[in-house]
Length: 248
Ligand code: DC
Image (cartoon, rainbow, N blue to C red; front, side, top):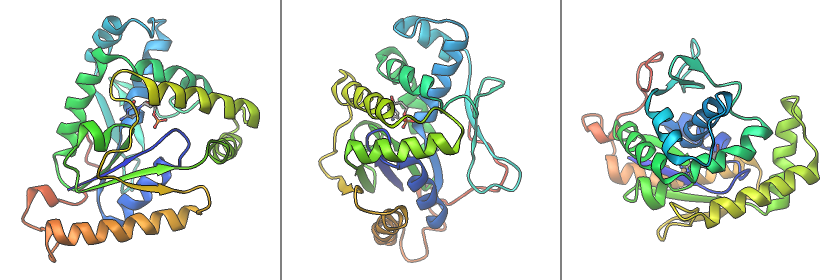
């Protein structure tokens, strides 16, 4: 079964989605990391991010893979072809450029196919922008995480500061407003709240409260979809693979 977690930039999706996957013993797929890996590779080669045909050609020439660090339960490393992109995908520079890549229709079709292929392998928490609306419209549970833009900017500035990256609040706020504008208003797969999604405004919630609220909903849905034994014999209800497996 799929738990889709969508929402705007800085709504806390990534850390919440990872924690939910861990507590539920589900796989985890970060679809934003896929667009980010392509963006970094293209920027390193001076490929025009507005040239959809060139971007698609480039992205098709390599496989995006998620991989584990030794002993990890969920994969934290992302590779584009042979190149490890993990440490390059979450910089303010990539934040600014990635929505051009994500807005490219030529590329999105390939990403959609890959995301569906990966997510068809068992129990998954999948996070992104269009997971409940486009990629997995039949997801068993759809969550739309929001928070007011000032709160999201505050969280993002803290994160950047913790990583030793530029963390100016006003600049972060403006960058988030720009990304919202592009994510909500783009022509293809814009950020929308799926009709049957549970909308969770996290402005006044701490992370633990958000995680617990989703785990409670997910547990109820899983018991219904996978049965009381967790669907042990059902391919659609498989939990985490052996540590060290790669998702390619
Ligand atoms: O969630 P994120 O900030 O890592 O996403 C990076 C970019 O990719 C962002 O511009 C939104 C876009 N994205 C998307 O269009 N569809 C997805 N399923 C996931 C991310």
